[in-house]
Figure 1 (cartoon, rainbow, N blue to C red):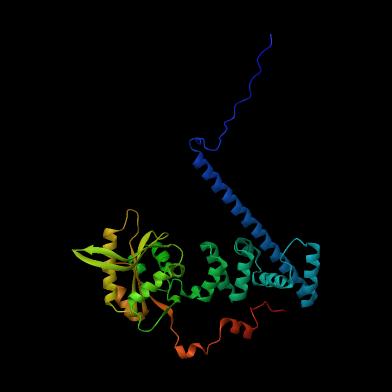
Figure 2 (cartoon, one colour):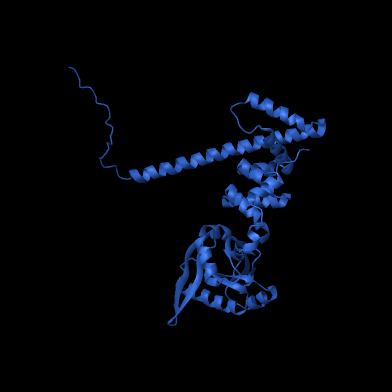
Length: 359
């Protein structure tokens, strides 16, 4: 008796237009997330290996130059030989080999290269070599770039505005109004001065002009404020005791988990500004602060400030308040504009971009 053939297990075929199985969308999203994460990890691993390779090449060149007296011309020959041996690879130009040598000279410790420098793209490292003097400052920018994910253009902007000298320098009363370590984190979040070089305002500009300019350049403003600031609104309305009040700018800081109230002043800091900010913070904490949020923080941004006056104004204030100055690009007198060289003329005069020096 001939038995029936067992049929192969049926496969579910999903044709276009037919309903998808339950949970398919979330399954697909999960796969996409994992694939993207794997791609990022693979790219980071490749970058780290490349940076480490460049460091080892630079270290070997340094050793040969030190012990065997190799001159600069050897680099040109080495570049030609390496490019002939590895025509499919980029990065063996004489200029890049000199960067490798400078890189190894700047970071002689293998541990730092593996843990920090190798986590940055190669051209970020070249930017640090070109633009930052001093090992400690260069290391600070390297770590900040990794922590905040700065692009090369953002890194350049931070270097040009010397953010390492401004971070954490606002005058505050945080140590007496916030518990540690929250007070330390809040302190490091604020700067002094803030650099608004993307604005062009005349000497008679009013506070509304400053606020309008910051909102028109909100991307640059957020970049200057730093990572973690989320914009909530401008002229935020608060009603207290039947009266209307308006906050200039309101942010929420994702890492601090608190609202940040910013008041803009186009003149010098005055003691009464602290009292007004104290009032705003009480109102925000009462009306907007959510469960689990930390106490709101105030920042008074003024054109100028007297350190002693600020310290006295904040000394007995119960709410956490910081005071910082800001710097902006004032309008140039019309008669001077035609006399100033253009960026292109300056670059031509200086001979182009800075290159690593030959030794």
